[in-house]
Structure formats: structure tokens, C-alpha cells
Image (cartoon, rainbow, N blue to C red; front, top):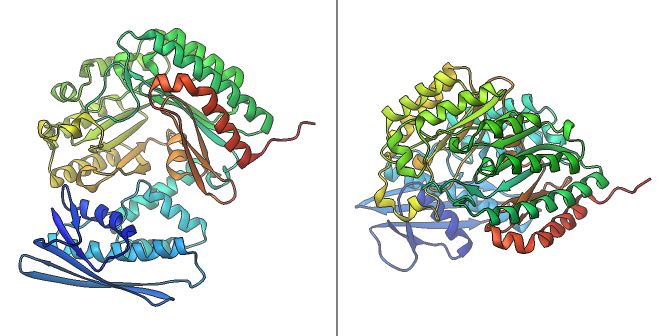
Length: 500
């Protein structure tokens, strides 16, 4: 869809306008000096203490007109001022496109990953729930249904982690293991097929052990506590039981107060990587929170997306994990996988009900730019917006009926139906790490290949990013440098405690 935009000179507005356009149309192209069957003209008036924007959309012989204004604090920073005007422009543009298409965007103008964080911020600043909800509805155009979902998640998170807003001087740790049995068609995570390349695994683990030792030493010297640890990837259970044993033994030896860490999770997402020996190792180190991810209970779907395990194997490995003492198991389902509709989703939920994992994360398929599925879209037929929404409604109804409550939420670009990914949990079984990574209340330190660190300033809340390289060779060549850089940043944020 080509859309002619008039009256916008500042190029900084182009990206937000594109993001709003993409909520309604596929492969949007904004043009500024060519004729098009759909055109939108804006008039922006910045009066110092307020900004008023009017917009007119012309298409197919019809014209739609709307406007919105926003009071501005004359003392606010230029950055914040631009943000307010940008949101006002997005508000007007969204209203015009909703009127033209008849499609209501339940998340309003929000296109970012963490909508719940916005509500947390308002409440932390002292705004009442009622005032925050009004602002979300009137300024951001979020529907009441999604506001209720946001509030229920905030309430659940503060119940599970009452000191959530006070953990800025603790950290959580993400440990990335970049190997999988095979690469899934929808995946863009750093994940390399094992294919017997054990030498590459050995080299990587050597670097990871070094990172853990040096980071652990700094944390001990600085008196910094660890809130949660999460082993992700890839699939951390792709490595051997012996390698897992050495890795967790190293964690126990070098991290401070491991027994006081609130939660340690190991992604065992691919059932074909789970063995009795590996489960025994997890139990040895008192790790009982794992993920076993079916994604779908339709065998044809698993084959289409490149997962080489069977539906039966998922069920078998779940029961095996239970017999080995795994008492907090998460499972993932994905809405909108190729050739799946309401019938397949209902079947997956029915199969999940036979197992009743402690938590269930319901993802909506997202066309990630670098995934095989996105590169070959014509090969993968996916559900319509309407059908996707009905599948999400099925999941919401099922979780409610079976005693699960939503506890975290995030969104992605190019997600089907402009929906969301929601984690549901039974009482007391919420993933603390998932809450910490989504609400950004503390530093998340990433160790290992492809691991991303998010450094949050304990006082200002400002966030800086640092990424380890995604391929094992680059990681192996430079892990000492990446470790030193992270410790340097940590010292700037937290300092080093003087030894007595």
C-alpha cells in the first residue's frame, strides 16, 4: 500500500507514521512527492504550551477529517517535547485509518514491545489507577479490554514481587546457549544446529565459564545480589549432561549467594533434547523450573516449521520431567502457525489440559525479518486477522476456566492481528525472570553467545544496551573483551564496594 503524506517536513516522524500504517496494511510505503490513491495531509501547530494537529485522509472519493491537541510543559526537554508531538500525530493518523478501514486497533497508537511498562511508570509517578486508565484510553487510544488486561498484569506482578520497584540495585542474569537440534522456520534467535560440531561447543563453553567467573568475582566484590538466573538460547539442554553439570557447578562456585537467588530457570524447550540424565543434573542443582514447548499439538505443523520432535515425544518428556521432580514446568503455544486455525488451536488447548503445566505462554506468530518463514512467506499460509483474534479469545477463555492468570505480556513487530504474547500461570508459579525482563526495573546482564545486556541506572532508570556477538566464532575470539566491557559499565552504575 502506497500512502501519500503531506505536511510533514521533519523526517523523524516518518518511522512512527510507517509503524502505524503497518498496523492496517501489508508492505506499506510512504511517499511524499508522488500521487497515490490514498493520501493524508497534516497541519501541525506548535503554540509553545500546546500542540494541535489536524489530519485529512482522502481515498476512493471519500474524505475523513479529525484532530487532536496536547498540552505541553514549556520547561520540558526537546526530546520529551518531540515525543509528545509524535504521539499526538500518531493519535490523529490512527483515528483516520480506523475510520477509513473500519479496523479498530485495540492497542491504539502503541507499537512498542512493553505496554505494561507504561502503566507501571504512571503508577510509580503517583497517578491513580483511574487517571492512568483515562490517559491510556484518551491519549493512547487503547481499548478498555486491553487496559483491564494491563492492570490485571500489574496487580499480579506486584503481588508476586512486592518489592518490584525496589530491585534496581540487584541484577538478573541471562545465560545464552546458542545451539539447537534444528532451526525453526519462525525463529531469529541466535541458534546454531549442533550437527556434531562438538569442538565449537567446547570453545564456546570455555568462554562462557570465563565470563561467569569474572562477573561473579565483580558481583561478590561489589555486594550486588542476583534476583533471578535464566538459561536461554537456542536450547540450553542441547549440550550434554556432563557439560550441563560443569556449567551449573561453575555457577554455584562463582556466583554470590546462589541459594538466595529467587529463581533459576532452564529452557528445555525442545523435547528432543530432554533425557533422564539431563533431568537428574537439573535436580542435582535444585533447578525445577523448565520449559517444554510443544508450540502445537498438530504433527503436520511441527514438520512445517522445522521441529523434528513428535507430539507424542512432547507428552512423554513432560511426564518424564514430572517423574524426575520437575515441579514448575512452562509450556508454549503459538497462535497462527502455518495452516492452523481455530480447530487446531482448540485441539492444542485440549491436549494442554491433560498435562496442566504450572504456566502457559501463548504467543502470537510474528513475521521476524530474518526468519526463514518471512523470507518465504508464500510457502506459509497463516490465519486471517479475524481468525487469529478468535484463537486468542479461545486461549483467554481456556486459561480463565482452568485457573491461570496473566502475569506478563509483550508485543512484537509484524505480529498477526496486532495482538500480543501473554504468559499465564497458576497461583504462585509465575516466572520472576519474565517479569524482570519485561518491566525493566533492574539490570539484566547477558552472558554467552548472542546474549543482550540491558543496563538500568539504579537512580535515573535510564537504560543502555550491550550485545555479545551472535555467532560462536566471534564470541570465542572476543569473550574476554566483552566481559571487561560489561564489568566497566557495571562499575559506572554500581561502583566497587570498599573492602574492610
